[in-house]
Length: 147
Image (cartoon, rainbow, N blue to C red; front, side, top):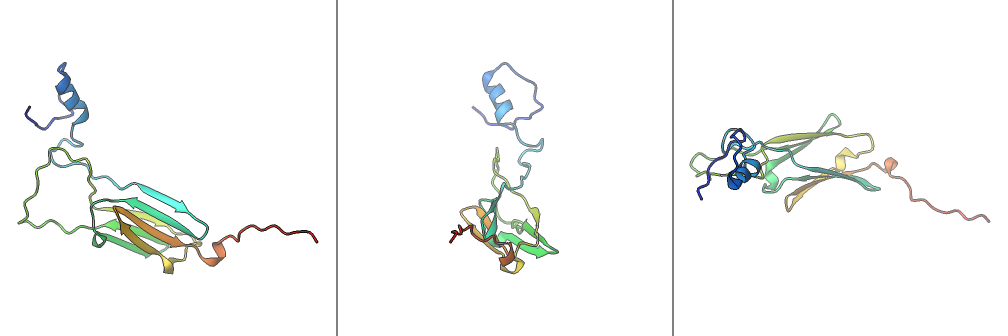
């Protein structure tokens, strides 16, 4: 069987193989080998003493990320150097995981200690720790006995 690019606008067919190729292997865009870049999935966790933002961005290095705090905003961006012209680019028939350059921003409220923000990139997860200021940390509940 020969593999070829399948257009999502292609006419429906009764052949089950052609139908399967049209429905499930159609490219994301009408231009072959140019998939639509997606933004990463994000988790935001809150703990007693901090918030944590996790972005799923597999396949990059720590140097590809730029994280800034500016005007009470956390700005996260993926910046990749353009590929060298002398490198041979692979020809993809289908690309399922693609992240292009992106920017994501979050508003930081007064409960965040902006001077103590830290980031870590491990196994495809960019994790940013946002510690709370001491005044925002709720004291643990306690029981007071009556004497």
